[in-house]
Structures are given as C-alpha cells and as structure tokens.
Image 1 (cartoon, rainbow, N blue to C red):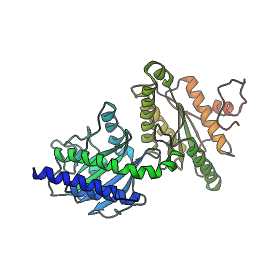
Image 2 (spheres, one colour):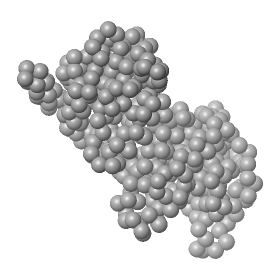
Image 3 (cartoon, rainbow, N blue to C red):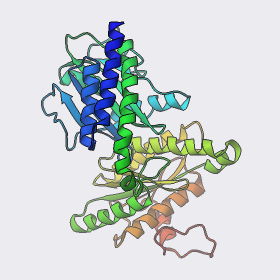
Image 4 (tube, rainbow, N blue to C red):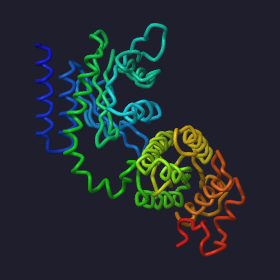
Length: 386
C-alpha cells in the first residue's frame, strides 16, 4: 500500500509541477524531473518526434548527465530510422486500438544474445541504437514511454538507472505509461502556445510540412545552390490507390493510409540529413534535400517505393526525382526543379513503375517538363507553369 501511495503522490506532484510551468522549457523540465523522481531513476530526458525532418529531438536532459549531454541541448537529435519502434512498432500498437505501453531496455545482453530488450513489452528485436547508447553512457537500463497527443505519437519520455541499480520491471513500465499520459496532458498547454505558428507550415492530417513550408525552403535551397553549388534534390510522390480506398472503405480509412505513408516518408527522409518531408495536398507528397548527392537521394527514393509497396492499403507510390546533381540543365528557379520532379513522377505513374523515375537519367522527362501541354485539359499542369 505504501508503494501505491508514494506513486500516487508522485503523479499528483508531476501534474502540479507541469500546471505551474509558464514556458515550454519549464514544462519540459518539470516533466523530466517529475518522471525521474517518480521512477527512482538518476537521469531523464524528454524528446519530440519532428516528423517533417525524421528526427527525435531531445528537448531536455535532467539528472546525472553523461559527457556531452546538456540540460537544454541546442541540437541533440537522432534519426528515427535508428529507433524505428516509434514509427513502426508503436504505430501498429495504437492502430489496432488502445494506447502503446512503455517498455524497458537493458544494457546487458539477454540470454542467447540479442539487443538487450527482452523485457517488459519491448519491441521485437529492440533498438540496437538505444542499447548501444545505454552502454556508451554508463547506464544499466531505461524505461521508454511514448507520449501520445491528439491520437498521434508526439515523442517519448525516457528514464534511466545506472549500472548496478535494480532493473526496471513490468510494473515500472506500466507506471511510466501513466506518467507519460500526465506529461501529455501538461504539454497540451505548451502546444497551444505554438499552435498558430505550427499550423502555418504544417499539414494537419499527417504532421508533415505543408506546401507553404516547401516553397519557402525550396527558394532558399535554390539560392544556396546558386551561391555555392550545393546539390538540391526534390522527390515528388503520388500515393497510388487512395481514391479506391476512399470509395470502397471510406475517407476515414483513406486518411489512415495518408497518415501511415506520412510516417514512412518521415522515416525515409531521416536517411537524408536535413531533408524536409511534406504533404503537398491530396495524395501528393515530397522530400526536399539539400547537400546529399543525387545518388543518395535516388537510393532513399528506392527505399521509399519499397516501403510504400508494403503498406497494407494502397497500391504503392509513383515517385519522381529531380536533382541539380544530375544533368538537368541550369537551375534558374525553384519552379523548374518542381516541373522536372513533377514530370518524372507523371512518367512513373503512367508506366506504373515500382521504382523512381529520375530526371536527367530519363531523357523523356526533360522533354516532357519543357513541352507545352498538348491540350487545355492535359493533366501535365506541372507546378510553376503559372
């Protein structure tokens, strides 16, 4: 009974601390400190999933920090493809109903080898990146609790104990799930402060960047290309089969398909440092990358097509790529790159290609992008034609 009373007091204390916070940083700090103390850890962190960049961004580190860890780090991020449970395992958990539970990871090898995550509801196979981080920072175990806001993964709460301390158990994981719910409720206040700014540049269904954000970033990217020759690449995707899903299964199911593909796009975009993942509207999406080579972008586009083809609903994706790293001619404006990527995507759609079509590597794409429409109703009204 005493243990239950202590945990109840810890929940109340966490809720009160977050309610008293007036700034985002105060809210993040209250969440981490409250969870650390409630779970008897020596370190806690709060991270947010930046879907449009495919990154887990650490907002705050509290407690006994390892070398290089800062309380409010400016740029401590981790590509989500190194921690796929937040985009894959957890998504499937709540897609089937209910909320995803917290789980425990340990730095020690489990019996028979493996990633060290055979405890308390860990994802199948675990996250080798997370286990390696435990060992690198001298921590013995951690409990990871997903934070879900508005029915979507927002980020995660992470609490660790040092080597030699008792390992978190299933009861701790259950309690961490409760704490994450309290943190989510407290963060809503902070979210509201940012809502106006975020909505201006975010697609409300998928959480990815929107067309306005892409236009601004692409203009900046083309200026940088002109200034220092940085490679700018644009991947335009058309999600196949959405109309069929909407017509036969309903728009709610179609929206889930769009959300699921948005998660896949975010995951693949994380493989290109700094890439922006966006929904342009309807069934059209894009990736904008500045810096990676054309070959790297095409390789990620291949992976994107493969993963899209494995989605339970839909019929894969038609993908077109245009990059200044390929022979596509002078890049006088952002609109030309959009036209080329559109034309490549149109060609992929027409050919029902399971792989991306790349402008500059398929001569027909350049002719298609630069030729005038053959009729007023021609579908090839590529972005930027005016």
